[in-house]
Image (tube, rainbow, N blue to C red; front, side, top):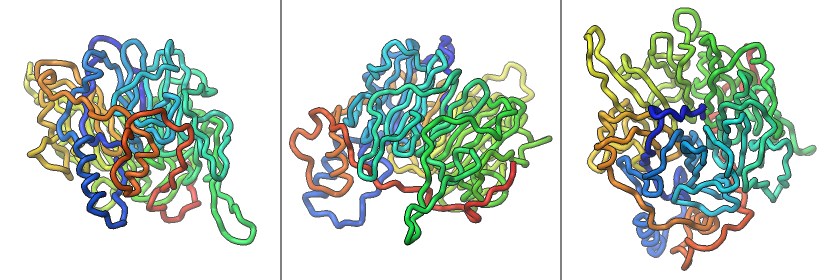
Length: 492
């Protein structure tokens, strides 16, 4: 979730980055087609131009910029940050205009969104192909793919072979917005304690009591899901005051001001925490987080693609869903990661299959004990995004310290399909970290798609020129594991 950033001196820092920099390939397989020798050579050359950064790096273009928030999303292959002056910078994949610069050029350098000049952005979130922002005056702006109404513009102009792309920031009809969260193809807006949603209703992830399913063919079965482009208040939460919200690819978790935790959407892998693999079409309170095991009203909430996290009263971190590549599903909230017990979790983020926390630890029962600051990461990493270094582990089933940041104060973390961002307070250690300056600044999305599809070496001058205003619609990959009993929803 993108929460309002406190621009006080204690909450301002520098952004660090680790993970993949080849935004065209991030989170995508190489395909089954056998590569020619020319294609293999082109792949090697591309790897030199777009390296994986396996330790946290400073970003040359943002070295002197005082950052207040960092954001991405479990399905996002792009990055969003904001500074003390309210300026918003984006970079990464841009096939659908999700960077908000009026084109579909993929950018390797954080770029200020000119169309938001004069607006003070306080937070943001990224979906698979779209972005949502919240501003200091309670407004919200979105851009990117609006195929399923996820930009919340109130209407959809997509046709079967022409996907609507919102290339420049567009105002959303909400008021008092303080935070936003994005699933793969839907958006949540937190406005004055109420939650609004728009986008793809599949799995019931919008929380309105339906998945919008209908049969698009009279003579055969072709199931479709009616897009919902207008931000609509979730009635099941109308009597509550929601304080935090987080989205995975196809599910949502929300926290109220009394510590109640609610979840809805795709129930596969137990990610909703209701002890059954069943979709929920509207918010349902997680019973395992009530009474003595209730959530802390100030709890963090976070969602990966198929997992969820929150704090119980007392600070214990609990989680549920698909937490490891191999291993059983966790069907209800449990304190699985015992290495994190006793740590104060300042901030948490989940990528597709990776996790990061900004944490601090003070030895109990010792007066004046020093506070230990750590950044802890784990998960199934493919691009070095856990930050363990070239000689360290590639992946980790259990939480482990990112030693490059040990002792540094990390204020926030953000995660995506193959990248991690850290907002840290600058000190001598962080200033000694390597600085990344990309070799290729921009790339045509169509050229990137050719690389993804196994085309031969890039065309000459591929990194130059203006982006086309209509990238072809990529085939959407829905959640690969539909829940059992899909279409049935228990009452909350």
